[in-house]
Image (cartoon, rainbow, N blue to C red):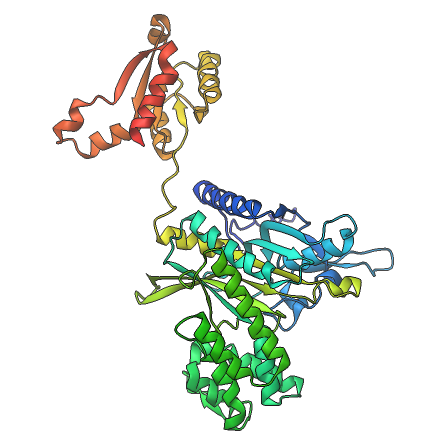
Amino acid sequence: MMAKVKKTPRPKAQTPKGFRDYFGAEVSERAEMLSKIAGVYHRYGFDALESSAVETVEALGKFLPDVDRPNEGVFAWQESDEDGNGDWLALRYDLTAPLARVYAQHRNDLPTPYRRFAMGPVWRNEKPGPGRYRQFYQCDADTVGAASVAADAEICAMLSDTLEEVGIPRGDYIVRINNRKVLNGVLEVMGLQDDAQRADVLRTIDKFDKVGEDGVRELLGKGRLDASGAYIDGVGLASEQADPVVAFLTSKGADNAGTIAKLRAAVGGSPVGAQGVDELQQMADLLAAQGYEADRIVIDPSVVRGLGYYTGPVFEAELTFEILDEKGRKRQFGSVAGGGRYDDLVKRFTGQEVPATGVSIGVDRLLAALREKGRVGSVERGPVVVTVMDRDRMADYQAIVAELRQAGIRAEVYLGNPKNFGNQLKYADRRNSPVAVIEGADEKDRGVVQVKDLILGARIAENATLEEWKERPSQFEVARGDLVSKIRDIMDGQS
């Protein structure tokens, strides 16, 4: 007896964990939004760059801002040569590290400063969670080779313009600015020499928005009980040593001038701190000269995200309108973009320090915000469907559809089994088609076509009692030569 041949199991049809599929309308919405963003970046004089999705791990470096073990945070693999010692390659985790490599490689052919924008997917090999995907879109603009804070101010102005361009009205967002040098001044005034201790203080500052002023004081001192009841050890600083940090975090005044005065006091006699405050003053002046006042762009010392990564000004755009979270509680939508000055990135390749500043917009978060505001999310209109009454006359139907497409109307011939005409109309409904075109042998002989307004048809079916709908026919007979103009009229009426 022959042994039973083992069947190969079928592959599971499911998206890998932490990834997702995007269908028609979602792809169109994103493309439209990216096109608007690109328009603003381009208007500001930035050039497009598309770099490779794969970089060497060496080029990516240890610059992943929010992961302690960068190689763990990326999708990496080793190229095998004969000796088994090939290069390690990885999918890019952001668009900034590739920019540093591109600039270092092509700097002799690029203008300085080099202003570029880039859009595309990035990949993070991290634990997925609700709303956290391992592949997501970023949309960046950076200026490499300009040391002046005018470059940072310009990016903040551009970020403000971009949000308004895509449909976030003034009053629903704020761009907040801070400066890493001010914090360095605070650390200097505290007299912290030990790098590990400085890192602990930075991490504590990062928790300010969660634990507040008292929580930061406890964490800088002996420690505190967190919400779960676990005890978190503190940094162990004396109370007066923690004062400058708390002064820095709580120095937001009634206006930019008030904030700057409080920050000057917080940095005491530190030269680097004073330089940071001067930079904030310059940025505020430059922005005010262009008409960007504190209702759009404001100095705010509580912006501490990614301070370990940046070397000067840092900024983030926050949406200030309220939404309901999963549990139905009101909360602010939060941050959709962040950036700042990072003057050490290109130096890894060239040995010379090259100043750089930039911003990254979280595309998926911004799209989600626009959906909340009802700015996108309309159902995409499908194509006009030309039905098939007689399968031997496919050439006639293709001629009709070609004419519609040449007139700029989205259209297709029904290519399924044409036997059941009802199924053809059901298909058109599923496609959200505005119009179906019907041409049987009788219509062909008389030089006419039937045009069915599917949107109106659906409304009549829903509201059969409404006399006003009944007055309006949803199917028309038109001369073959008038087909394009009749379909245009119907579609204009629908929209």
